[in-house]
Image (cartoon, rainbow, N blue to C red; front, side):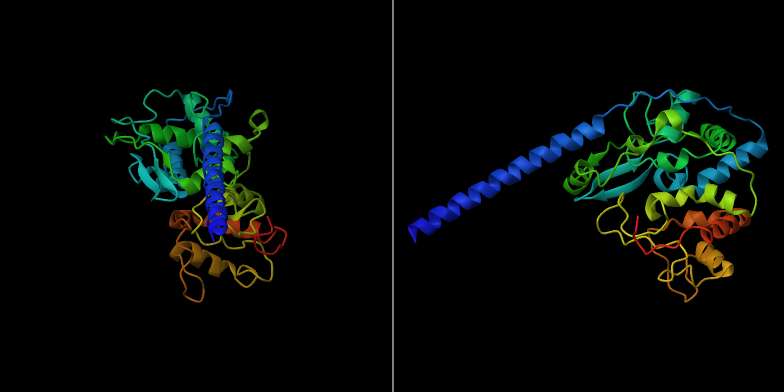
Length: 299
């Protein structure tokens, strides 16, 4: 019996040592990835000042998810806050106290939105630049011009504090910093004419790639907490909903957040996408009908 307890003691000690070594590896590996810097020299874009362009910028900010992370007033907003994933708040994008951007140049804005990189070269966490890199110069200029025009909001900055699960996901590259997956020297902004076309739909649907994957087949959302439900398959595969839906069904789902059978869409699905105009939504539908049909989660 004494030998058994001695063996058990050794086993528990070995497990404790493995846990310490694992935690140490996760800490330093995730820290190295978060502290990595990127030397990016973005190509400048012209910032308009006319009311039409600013209205376009406001529309983009409202329908491409900016408010989801930065709040309706752009003064900052809670994105994630729990023990496992930690605390992540979108920063204050206004000129008020606590602003992240008060000293930014126009080039800094381009670097952040199109490349996911801060002025000091560090990668921005959860900034979906891999989607925004495709914004046309006109749209990016309008978006930046609008954001620079919003009223000042005084709201203190909340530092990012990642929890143990988030650090493991970063260390294992299950959560990838957008700046680390962008081919910065070869970023090619889109040049497409708005219209109800598959080409324009592809441009608008770049917003969907972060959750639904590069081929839009859905499945596990890698950038979110482990308890997030899977993203839907947006390809016309027979196992997915879109193969059975009409354009009217799709528009209803986007506008009302409900499927044709009356069930609610995944609550993770940003409802702001339903504020896109008819041209944008119908163009997305036209594009989704052209993508290859693949099973759910076949990313």
